[in-house]
Length: 253
Image (cartoon, rainbow, N blue to C red; front, side, top):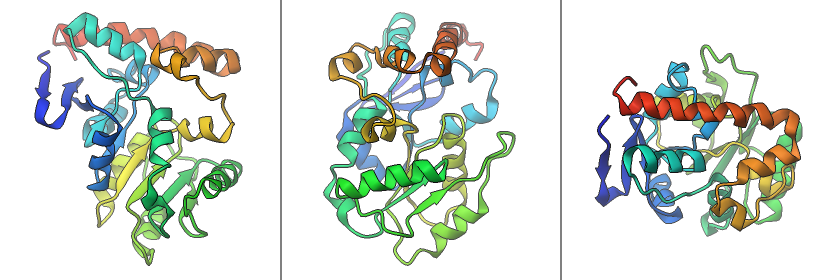
């Protein structure tokens, strides 16, 4: 599979997913223009040959940021690609410092439960993000066969102030497909951010990663130590990504 590089935009295609090869500012500039951003994990990417709808959502994104250390290593080994890592947690820390988020109505967030919504909204308000009383939504349980949410679209369309950014704090495989649905059905452009559990590192719901561990692509190890029952199998299965890269290399993907 031939890798396509677009240097002037800091983009390259891997698995037909448009990854950004730059820094936080490159990603933020795209979101300001109302683009749809995904942050696929190693475990998520390892399933794309089997999960067509998830893969289609990733391909439908305007850009992805390279969060997976395993993906970066394999891209170098298989295709000699030098990729700059930009993790979801790092993106989140920098994004929440943006001055524009202090303005009313700029950010709208979606959470998977009432409890997480309370924790996340309190944190956002504590750090100066003006989330307001109407700019957050607790998602229903989505059927993975067909992810849609007309109620969410109606809410976003009815807001007096149209938000510039939509923060999806949902699980991988769900948030990307919901983001793709929103991109196709919302009447106006909004910067869609699929960073999943990244906000949990800031709120303390998950252990915050030391920078040196993140730089060494060892964030997965912290999560396994913190919750082995939840994450051990997930990250063990991520090594199937080697096979996905092999399929890509021989043009079978």
